[in-house]
Structure formats: structure tokens, C-alpha cells
Length: 442
Image 1: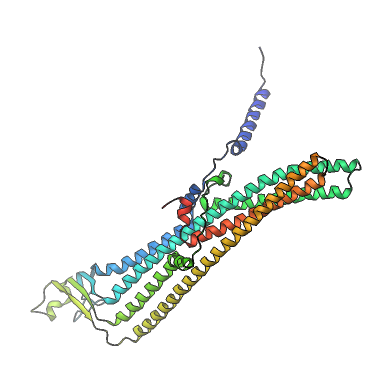
Image 2 (image 1 turned 45 degrees about the vertical axis):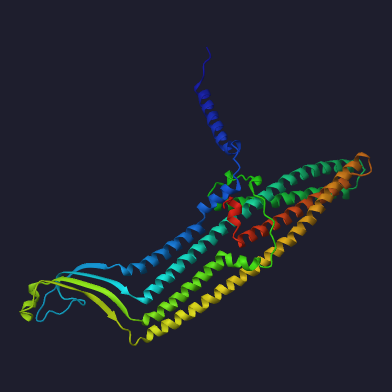
């Protein structure tokens, strides 16, 4: 029978703990994260984004402001008491006779200024909804661009690692040829330079990918380690159709422009409301009071005193002289004129931006075609050098030069392609088609 000492048991337990710790450490890498398609990433960003939450809070604030104005037409009921001691004639307490209980109700009946202020609040509510829509588009655009950029860096890293492996093999072969006296030291330095350039590009791509992945994590609330993208889930970008009237139509449909127009309308309604503040108003008013005998009412009103008293009627105001209101009218007029010019400027800016984006997309498409052809030529040149090496009409240096050129052409093609995608996405947002494209909604 084999005996097991206490030290052996402790050693096995310690080894088991170490094994468990190693497994927990390796668990994130052992369990591959499932790729997240673009549509799901955008949905997560829209739910998690602080900008949309802020826009929603602003809308709730504007809606509450409208309800506050509207509820002036609902009688406001106040119940209280004006208890006090009277010596002599019973004077009022804060504008009301001393009473055991006092009930008042008041509401607006006819108030042209209030009606205009309500219309202005509704216009502000529409402006807020359009601002929220623009903020939502901003979140979608940010997420889509980050997703596309991460796909770019990941594709670049894959290509660069293949180039690095081949460049290191060339470097080792050149070092061997230098030892044999076939190549010079300058050839070895050139080979090391090619490897260093590839490593520099890899470091740049890894750092940029980490930054973009961190940004996506902040946008969506996902853990950085769980962010895996599916480049095939990105829908094909539509080819923009150029039209002379397109910038103007796009500007009219732009949420920022529409919001500015609604804001200008709200300011004009406020200006009109301030002007109508000089019009007559009518309010409903009623009051019930239960008067106490110890306030000497019976002494001064011996024939007409009664404890329970009710008054119901309307209160009419006829503004006659109000210099301060005239100043408020001028202030509101200036704000309305300012908002009108801001709306005009927003429309002009949106129209110019759309035209600029349309022309930029056309130029970048041409640049992408050039970069694509240059990369294709570099690829064919690399294949030709490999063929020549088989027939001993080319050497390792020719192969290294052709490979480096092909790698640089690939990087250039990626950069131009991403710039084109960014401009196309900007144009989709300007035309109000971004969310439909990204989420596949109608």
C-alpha cells in the first residue's frame, strides 16, 4: 500500500490552485468572442450613448414646459387659512381677510399671449425632436466609421504579418549570403530596413486598432476583449447620384436645418406672444372663506355678516401703460430675427456641405481606382519577380523591393478606400439615409 505524506497533499493542492488560476487567465483567449455584426453594434450604441439620453432629457424638459403653459387653463385650487387676532377693524393678511379656511380657484380663460407661448413651446418640441434625430444620426455615424476603421486595421495587420514573415526570411537569407561573401553589408542593411518598416507599420496598426476598439467599447458598453467585428456584415455603400438640385433638397431635409427652422418659428411666436401681452386678458376666479367671529366682523358688519362666503366671477385686465412690456417686445423681436438668420445660415451650410461631399466622393472614387490599379500592378510585378527568380534572372533584393512596394501600395489603397467610405457615410447622413442604410430599416 502506497502512503501519501501531508507534504504531498499540500503540493498537489497548490498545483491544483495554480492550474485553476492559469485556466481562468486563459479563459478569455480560449473562448473566442463571437463576431458582432454592424447592425447589432449600432443598436447597442444607440441604447448606450449618452448623447441620445441627453437629447431625450431635453425633449422631456421642453414637453414639461409646454404642459406648464397649457395647464394655466386648468383651475388651480388652493386651500389654506388666514388665522389671526384682530383689534379694531379686521385688516387683510397677505391680501385676504382673516379666515378659518380659505379656498381659491383661478385659471386663464382668454389670453392671446399665452396661446402664442404654447404654440412656441410646441415648435420647440418639434425642434428638440429633430435635434434628437440628428444626435441619433451622429451616434450611428460614429459607430459605423469606427467599425469600418477597425476592419481596415485588422485587414492591414493580417497583410503586414504575412509581409513580415517573408521579409524576415529574406533578411536571414541575405545575412547568410553576406557571410558567404555573395552580398555586401549594404544589402544586409537594406534587408533589415525592410523588416523595420514592416514592424513600424504593424506597431501603428496595432495601436490604432486598440484605440478604435476602446472607442467602440465606450460607445456600446461592451468589454474591449469581447469586441470582434464581422466585416462582411457592413452593407454595400450606394453609389451617389449627382443632381444639380440635390444639395438644396438635402438641405431642406436635413434635421439640423429643420430644427433651426422650427426654432426660428418658435422665436417668432414668442415675439408675437409678447406683442399680444398688451391685449386684454380674462381669468376665471372664485373664492370661499369661512370667517371667524373673533375677528370682529359682527361689530363692523352687524347686519350683513355670515360665516360662509363665496365669490365667483371673471377678472378682466386692460393693459393701458406698460413700458417694460414694450422693451420685452423689442427683445423678442431681436431674438426672432437672429433665429431666422441662423436658420438661413444652417440651410446654406448644409447645401454647401452636401455639394462638397458629392464632389469629394467623385474625386475619391477616381483616386481609389488609381490606387487599386497601382496595387494590381505591384502585385503582378511581385509575381513576375518570383517567376524570374525561378529562372535565376532576379535575386532576393529584387524580390524584397517588389514585396515592399506591393505592401506600400496595399496600405495606400486601404487609406484611400477608407477615406472614400467616410465621405460616402457623411453624404448618407447629410441626405438623411444613414440609419436606413446601417440598420436596414425602411
